[in-house]
Image (cartoon, rainbow, N blue to C red; front, side):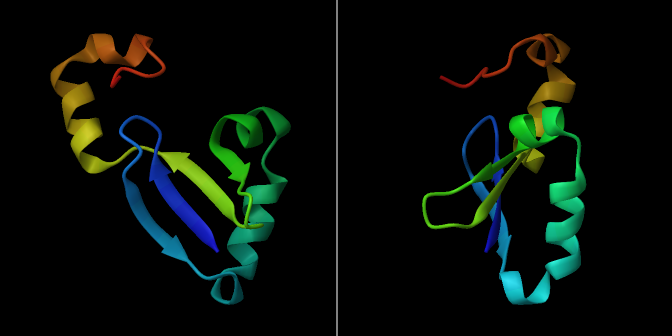
Length: 75
């Protein structure tokens, strides 16, 4: 399973079962190593977790642009 989770607030955005996303997995794994380390993580259950940003955090970042300079602004 590939799950999408907000890298700021840890909210699960959604998930896709492996059987329906073979091409997506191939594309994710083709990403350069830097982006894989930053955005893709293998979970302890053998799935993939993609760290992205949810709509609420994106709106907050647009309202307060100084948040872009901080990796984890929600404590």
